[in-house]
Image 1 (cartoon, rainbow, N blue to C red):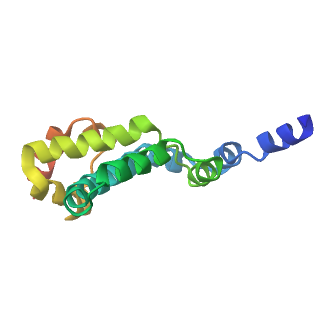
Image 2 (cartoon, helix red, strand yellow):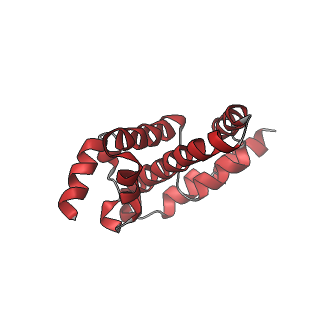
Amino acid sequence: QQVMAELQQVMSPDLVLGAVRSPEQEALLPRIEALVAVVIGYADHFMDDIGGRLIGNYPMLTEALRRRRVQTDEANRFIERILGLNLTQDQVERGTAFVAGVVDRAGDDGLRQLWSDERHLPTPNEVDAPGLWLARTELVD
């Protein structure tokens, strides 16, 4: 049993990828994780809007989906780690809060700016400050 535990530790994607990941790739991880969190928040926002109108038991359905996201199995965690991601519930909540903040200030049209230009993608700091993101995207245009 100890041999298996040691073998699993040696074959850990975190350990293997950490050894082959360049400093440039390491520097990109916060941006990628922030973007993935925002994509999840964006998808949830529109899914909630549309699903709430079309599906009678949507709250139960979405609760199950979100619970599954938090309680994901080791196989999915393994895939995330292979991709270099480590999405936590806190990061998902950051993305959700970002989307809510943008919608509160600029509505769904403001939120759609995310995809209109690659320069509109939020930085990790802007995910925590949607007002700053909105101000920056106005300057870009």
